[in-house]
Each structure stands twice: as C-alpha cells, then as structure tokens.
Length: 169
Image 1 (cartoon, helix red, strand yellow):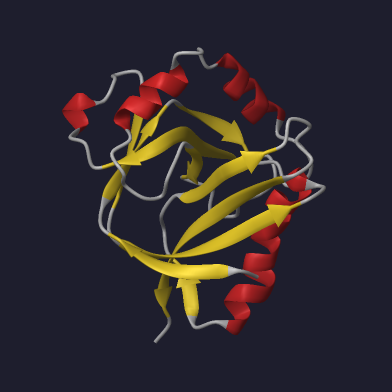
Image 2 (image 1 turned 45 degrees about the horizontal axis):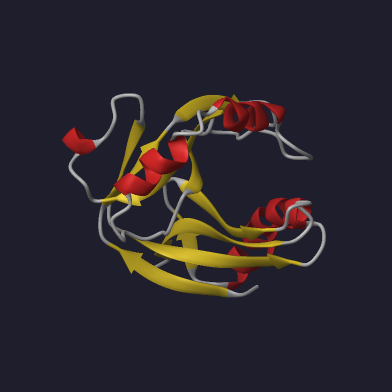
C-alpha cells in the first residue's frame, strides 16, 4: 500500500454535516442523498474557507462512530474543508469539527476501474494488512477521505484516506 506519514498542527473541519448509517458494502444511499441535497452554492462556500491547511479539500470526514462500528450504526459525516480560520468566520449552517495535532498515515488510492470498490477496500487493507505490520495504532480522530480525481462514469479515480495514528510503545 502506498502511504506516507505526516504530522499536522491543529485544524478544524468545516462544512455541511449529518448523522448517517454506516454501510460496509455497496453505495451508501443516505450519503448519496445527503450530497444530492446540498445546494450548488456549497462548493463556492467551501472554496472561500480554504486557506491552504492540509488535507486539501473538499473531502469527507467521518467521526463519532458507535463503539462496535456495526453495519447500520450511525456516525457523523461532514463534507468540508480543513481550515485554521477562526470559528466566527464560518457559516452558521456548517458543522465544525475541531481536530487536535496528530500524526497521520495517508493511504493513496488509485484505480483505473472499480474506483468505488477500491475506496471501500482501502479501509480493509489498512486495518487488515498495514496496521498489523507497522508500529502504529489509530487514535480517536476524524477519518478523512479526499477524492482528488474521478472519471465522469465513476469507474476510475485517485483519492487519499487519512487516519490519525500514534506510535505503539
């Protein structure tokens, strides 16, 4: 798995959010409905909040999972950007998730076909292959998925999965 380790100072994730059910296989209909419900102005509002803070966005951030992460359990989902802008400059309609300083492992996802399946597979590979063979464990923080390119038919694309980690002692 192509990955890199990066340290980031505190930032906040800002954007529209909702509680949606976790879906392990196939498309998440609630996530799709959420994105379709966003007004066209959302992209411009998010772009105005970008200030060069990494990870580059817009992206999706998932947090506040049920302890067992059971299929169908709800989590907090935000479609947003990373910023260090003061909270007072953020639209009231946007959720704000404060993210403390962390070390992150960033997994690269590149797929010529089956992009959606590749996005779901990266989580399984991270937890099933990468973590058991590296001296890191995840810490409580948003899981960030940044899709940087996607073909019109959705079959190919490039993305990054960001997971906050700490070195095991």
